[in-house]
Length: 227
Image 1 (cartoon, rainbow, N blue to C red):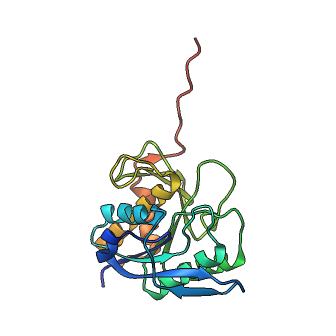
Image 2 (image 1 turned 180 degrees about the vertical axis):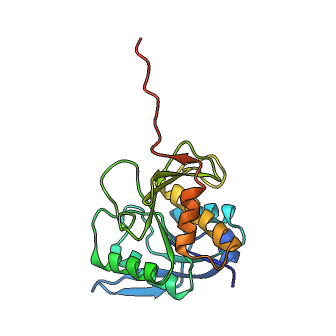
């Protein structure tokens, strides 16, 4: 099986299904339990674009997609956590989480800890403005923000050992998607790394991301000159 990237998001589009090793839909029951069902099309379009960005950088990768939400404003911590567990069951080496929750929820924290303990690289979106979001705020997760200095194939170290930056452009290089797309780019770059060095570990990948970044420190925008 090729190197596998897990994507917990809104699903995948039909043109991408030839790259899917597995997919599932996660549904929250009225009693709080979680069911699995056959995945549907990505009506939101967010997960499909995340998949395109990953594959644009690492075309040899295969994908495992957990459809955990259909409305970007309604991600549930339990569904996201279950998506992480499911991706682990499918053998994902990297799990992309282009989403952010305002609350630190135990079930999500546990899922991230379990994934990290098994040697899986977790990558999550961390918006440049506002307070902390989860899972990106967890120490075992690679947090990624958008960085306008970056193009589609390079990246930045904004805070050493903690926060990376990447381009927010879609796979077509035109539209933008903020930290969500930036996180997908780091996941794609990590997949490219593991594809070249299959015996490397998460620490090796992190060392590479830290050492080969083109930019360091926060993006500084010039202030307008006084008249």
